[in-house]
Image (tube, rainbow, N blue to C red):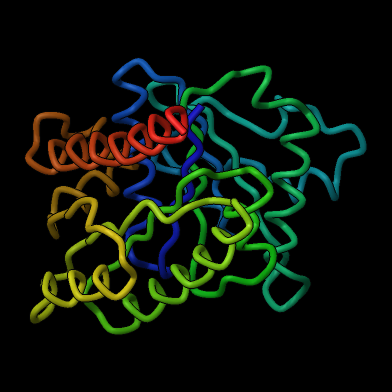
Length: 258
């Protein structure tokens, strides 16, 4: 089972990217579980036509006996979807919602029952507090990939996330798998992100173009892989998914040899 956490600044296209990667992997015949770790609870929405998915945090607060089936739904290409959720704005800790969600999913035996080949944690990365860093630690994710553009705030957030990952690497938790560039067509974008990779001693895993196809698919409430499977953008997601798998499998093989 490959366990992958994807982090990035809010609005960077993280959930769209993760959902399309999930769709690619599912189309390859892999069993995929996508867990949204964002208070907005919209990580998996493109996989089930934006139908409202009850969040785990809301279920735990409002229902006495919550079942595993209450917490999930099956989306496009049979991707298993779950949303952690969060508190009302200005009330409580959003990070606590992630902790509650992951702990409840584990207690209910989601990994044993569905036996996913790939688990994708889609995590907001503007602030890496204890709750938001949970997918990096406690055995949840093996690899962390960070999505950024060449915009200064996105790069700043990516650097902070990377520092958090490196902190946990020292405790044998998740390792940094690399950087994904989601282009915004800003000046010297590629060069800026390559410099970031150099500073972090990591690699640029893949690059996604800025494309109207993504917005057109979202208007249809679908992933690009579902709405426009023959498009150039769909091919970019396929290539990115393969590159992510290659990084994860290479690391697994190296650990097996050791």
